[in-house]
Amino acid sequence: MTARLVCLPGDGIGPEVLNAALRVLEAVSYHFNLDVVTEHAEIGGAAIDACGTPLPNKTAALCEQADAILLGAVGGPKWNALKAEKRPERGLLDLRYRLNLFGNLRPIHPVPGTTQSSPIQPEILDGVDMLIVRELSSGIYFGERVYQPTFAYDTAAYTADEISRVVRLAARFAQQRHCSLTLVDKANVLATSRLWRNVATRIMKAEFPEVALDCMLVDAAAMQIISNPSRFDVIVTDNLFGDILSDSAAVLTGSLGLLPSASLSEAKAALYEPVHGSAPDLAGRQCANPVGMIRSVALMLRYSLNAPDAASSLEEAVNSVLRDGPRTPDLAGKGESVTTTDELADHIINQFRSKKDVRTPAHAPGTDTQ
Ligand code: IPM
Ligand code: MG
Image 1: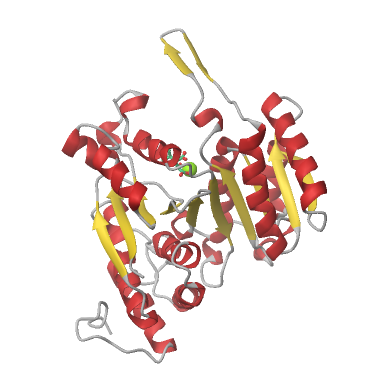
Image 2: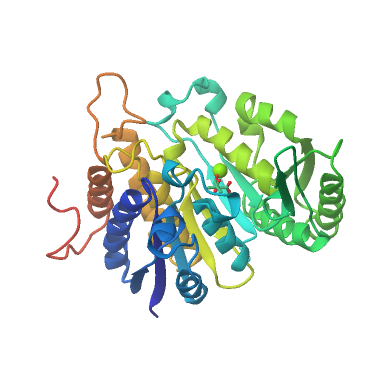
């Protein structure tokens, strides 16, 4: 069966990291006999420039038909003066909303070769392997918003159904992992958080009795993620807290550029994107780390293309290159030579092939670097 993949490069380093990741995908699909066709479309600032809107109808329609979507990044200084509803970020938010991408998986698992770039002590990083499940299509990101020169508000609202579906998703992952789920909220202040707590407690007791649920206030969780991260298995939290906590958790891994994400819905639609942003200062210089995007491809292989072996082989190749080098500037130590975005992808491709008894096509990407 042919998988239809829609690629949305977006802005800043988005096109570079996506391009590198697509070459890796080509090598992996060749080896695993996966039939993937790709189509490119515009989103974010690139779409504003081309069509005057951050999510053109054509892009949304293509994404609705796709088996999976790969997105680079959106945003940049060029569009900073625009009003919130016209900004590049709006394109991504509208896409998440339209496709009902309510469950955002952000795995955080420091690996050898990168943790020396983390400011956190090595013994604290020992055994860290957490999955942040962020609610992605509701909450304060999508509530009523008013901005006036002397007055403004944003609204955070959740229904019990919106909470239930993401709690169930997180609980199913916890079942397959270490059977521990932490709900992060601000139930001592917020009404939405109290609803989250009630709904989560009820569901976990009735449907997932083998998974231990603990509830933690977000301020305490922010501290624990940095000071005692190995205590977490699966975290489930709302849209805003999930956004903030996943960037802080990235500190544990050594670079924000390493983190992938998968955004899932109840239907077929799924979007895969790195956790990092468009990093305009790095754009066009071939110095961005493509690993967050490449690991997002691995998540796509696992969750959308039903190719878990391909996903694991790719992740092993990534981890082995991260361990032995070469490294992009975000991870290179003092005096260590640095590699480019494309070269790193080539090293991953070569590593992947060397571990497989791989058929190498004549036009294979990455064969010219070693
Ligand atoms: C993320 C990003 C987005 C978000 C931005 C680009 C709108 O920070 O995916 O974490 O806040 O969700
Ligand atoms: Mg973010």
